[in-house]
Every structure is written in structure tokens, then in C-alpha cells.
Image 1 (cartoon, helix red, strand yellow):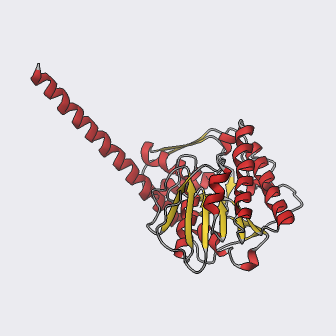
Image 2: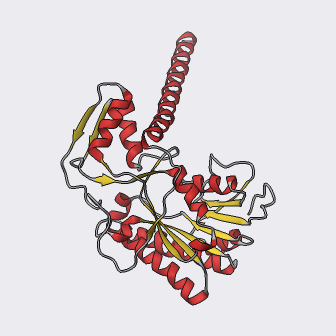
Image 3: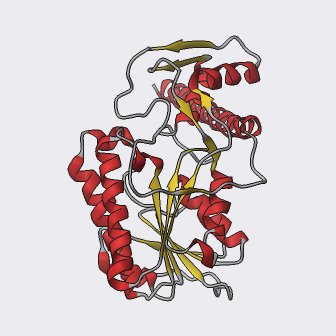
Length: 324
């Protein structure tokens, strides 16, 4: 059932499937800021949802629920599915079910709703020989998007995201994991040798670009969304340690991190994508500071909750002793 909050704007309404997650919630906010109506479809309600965003609780595997949610939507974004390489690595059935069949459900819902554009959240791993079943599922999903356009005329934009970071990320996110280790344990351990290179892009920059692509010139295109600079993991950990101004121990396992690319996600593929960048973007250092603030607040809240629990337990024990 759709929970309505506000009439959608004249720019039209966008359905954001997976809009309660890390990237999806930022996309929802960017759409709202740009004047679009927003309807979020997810298994859980977003803690970041604003009063003027609608919410529909549902599963991407439920085609009928998804079809109902897509009614009246001009644009359909799909951010749902299995996004963790490690989870997908040994789970081909799960990866295919959520990332391929789930995406077909999203496409079909968009087609039935006569949506103007379908926007698919893909990955730079589609260019790579790495990524195992995660890569394979995203490649297959892209083919379905393209074939829906060829067969049914459903316009699309495929967004191939690079290494994202920013607020609302969790432990599966690479930068979040490094920052959390540094703040909580004063130590960073990275299983690889630190020579892997990434082009980090702040999630808010990616979200703004993910709304910009609704312009007509980005229809039926494959776009790459990555950062402006190339960073070695080793240099990133050094930067984190310096920013904290503490004695942070950094340790590398010098192992081959299975399923992940080292220098570049690119291997020869016949279908190219065009890189889309923002002229005004969040500097990595500023972005890291903002992430540190969020994690610091999480840790502080956790300590306060633990202390409150200990106090309550002590009081309970004292009362029990008095009764005896």
C-alpha cells in the first residue's frame, strides 16, 4: 500500500527501488532536492526519509507489488539487489535471483507503468575479469535492460558506479571499514598489499549526477560515475592516520583479495561507457572528515547505551539484594 505524503511535482515522480539503502537513500534525497516527487520501494522504511517522500514496503521479487508501486511514476530507478562482492562470490543462485530476476521484475513494472525512463544501478566491474558472480549478474542485468529497450521501447540509462563512500554507509563499504577500525581500535588492517587503486566518489556527488542524467541527452546511454583522482589503498590509510593525529597502526596482509581488481576494473569489452563527472565535487579529505564525524557519533552512542545498560543492571542487582 502506498503511503502518500504530498502531491508529486510537475517534474514527475520517480520510484526508487531500494531507496532505503546507502546509495538509494541519497538518490531519493537528490531527487527531492531537484523538485521530483519520490516514492521509495524497499523491505524496510528508510530512517532518512523526508516527510514529502512516499514509502511502499515490498520485495523486488514480488512483481505485482512492484507493478502497483510503479503506477504513476515517470522514472524508475533500481538500486535493489545483492551489492556485496563477498556475499555474491559463493552464492551464484542468490546473485542471479536478486540482481538478474529482480531487475527483470523492475523492468517489467516500469514497462507496465509506461515509465519514461528506467535507470539501472550497475558497476564498473562489468568491464572487469574480477568480481565473479557479482560481475556476471550485473552484466546479465544490463543485457536485459538493453533488450527491454530493443523489444519494448523502454528508454534507459545504465549507471556504472565506482568506489562510493559517504554517510549512511555500513561495514561492507571499504572506506567506512577503514575509518571504523581506526576510530574504534586505533589500528587499520587491510588484507591486501595496499597497492590496489581506486577512484573514490562521494555518494552525494554520485547522487546529484544520478539525477542530472534524467535530461534527454542521457537517454539510452551507459555512464561511468567514479571520482576525479586515483588513490592507492596504502596512501588512503596513511591519510586517515594523519587526519586523526593519533598513533594509528596500519597493517597489510599482503594477500590477494579474491574477486577484487587491483589497478583497474577495465578489461577489453566491446561496449563502452562514457565517464560523467561533476565540476563541483566533495574533496576526499573533506568527505573523510564527514564520515569520521558520523562514525564517532555512532561509537559515542554505542558507549552511552552500554553504560546505561550497565547502570540499569547494577541498580537491579542492588534492589534484588535488598529484597533478600
